[in-house]
Image (tube, rainbow, N blue to C red; front, side, top):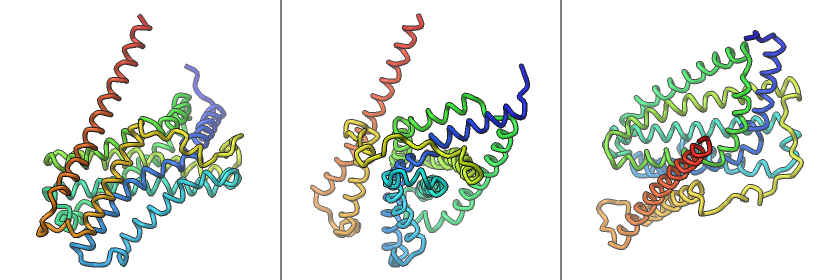
Length: 335
């Protein structure tokens, strides 16, 4: 096998980061900020309840709660940034900074979700008790996961730059972008929702929470490190800038794939609706254990939960059946 020359390595690296600029680091990728909005909405609800009923302080006077609100607000704005038009492609350094912040906020929201899951599972489903008791212990470990993840990715990137990125990894950027809007988004939501459902099924959720924190520490630290390095390359040369699309992105384009028949869209909307329902119940005073709840309200909440669980289970079964059928057909063609 012929050894790569310095020029070959430089060309391979250039091709990789050009493909990254036009795929996972494209300005259009900011539309995935909706996943972070969904997760942060759940966390805002949880911490509002915690500060209001346990800490007995005004949530809006707490810096951490304000940080959650600002983060959520930023992701909502970021979702519409690609609609600005050619401006985001003319100011690519600025748009890459915006995208980098989107990935960082989504990573923060996911790790915070893992924290909530871990402390709740340790305290036997009592989030209000577990957060104050165990978060000072768990947070340093999550920070350690994050720091270790970025240190590992830093040295991994240096190693890759020395030997040159492979063609398969370069092409993988485009596949990663296309799947970000499809099965991976659904699997991410399914993963989170499954773990939330696990709160009802014992200590196994603790393992899921720890593994989830490790998984996100690895995956997002790599993505953030690569996008940060691409940002540096963009400041050095316009060779690494994203290609300007021939067609201007419109608001309709963002929702051209919108359909309630798709589980990746339907299930998150069901979860948001359920969160809104819980918020209404909380503000109505029915969250207090000493208050007797109407039977219709109890059954409405139960039926809502059962409907979401059945939808998740049914969608997952259909997804597995579809994948099995595709592999079966491919196997038949090979024969």
